[in-house]
Length: 138
Image 1: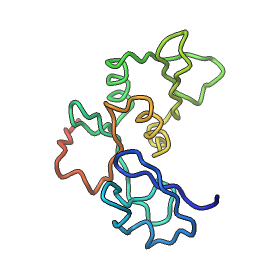
Image 2: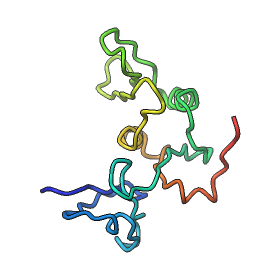
Image 3: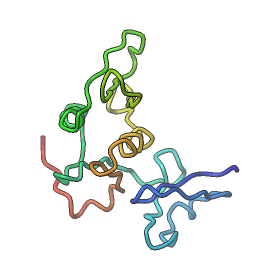
């Protein structure tokens, strides 16, 4: 299966076999799909990570770490992964979130990794869909 996988607002994935710019901009993928592409897809819309209980856009690793700690995640300090920022649930858990050191390198792929491991608390949204979200100045 070759093509591009698209994630909708609810985390449902759809394969587009011969992607064009128009296929990423369409909004007729079904009733639950957002139609946007991933951060690396041609014509993609920018995405943001939203912490649902507070309806807050995560704009830095400081904010993200605070929210993850609230949910029981802890920083994982591994001397061999100097270019990564990692979080784990516990010493006995296989759950691990690995992020690039720099927030400017934080991509949609990393956002969905956080969403999959914290389904009820985070969501990835199109930047254009943020009229209803308060984005605090910090």
